[in-house]
Every structure is written in C-alpha cells, then in structure tokens.
Image 1: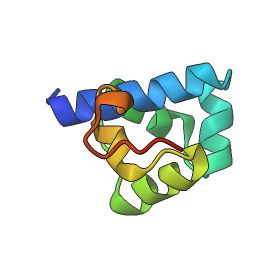
Image 2: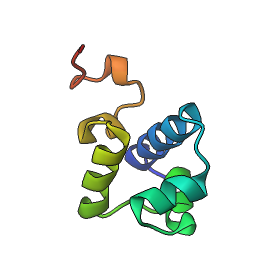
Image 3: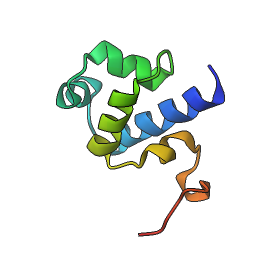
Length: 80
C-alpha cells in the first residue's frame, strides 16, 4: 500500500472510531456496501472521486485532509 492510500485509510478509520460508528452503519449512511467501506479503511481500494467528495461531506473532513497523516501538521490545515 502506498503512502496516499495508507494516510487516507488511517484518517477514515480514525474518524469512524472516534465517532463510535460501526463500519456497517457508516457504509449504509453513505450508501455503499460494508465491504466497500472496509476496503477503503484497510487501503485495499481507493474511493472514486464521487465517493471521495461524498466522504468529505459525510465526515466533515476536507478532501485534502484525507491525505495528511497528521491534520494539524498538514499544509492545508486551517484553525477554525
């Protein structure tokens, strides 16, 4: 798995765990299968542009932050 996939998978997994959601619930709310969500979290597959945008809206995470291992050190990070 490359660094981009690893960072994306880690951010998505951390977001779900911090929110206390099961994979199946997150997948259903986003409109994808549990298997698809699981592949994204493990880095086995990467979402399409359409799903990446939907994930950003669903999670509240800006798209560019999915690619930073530490959002606070991300060059795109903005304090709210």
